[in-house]
Image: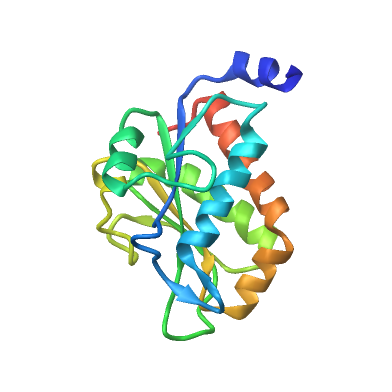
Length: 188
């Protein structure tokens, strides 16, 4: 509880994060996993990591997430909102992490990309505009004013292997970027 007191006293911005996709819309499926499985587990692990460090809200209880419309509406109520996804492509060698957001969120997006790229040893595709990726039309960016994080390519066996081997380090790296963002006040 000491950590929560330390960071909470410094926290200047509110934080919301969400797992993209669900049982009804599992997203990409490759290499024995669905996007929904991966990002829901990631979101829950991130919540565990941040629980005693900063105040946050998320889209549902452990093991479940809320529909996109609910998540994007809740995201709009916060200073920093992040939704996690996995990329997929027909070319199984496509690799890397990227974020999609409005331009004012590029600094946080870039920090997330650097942290994930270094942790997983995959390419840093960088922070990009809302229309740059397959999730570009999601209301999470336009209505929720959030950042979509494409953690890695689910269709790339090497990306997936690195993610599985380094998941806890990846959670910590993302969590540390978010802690700094909400404590230093770098929403935009």
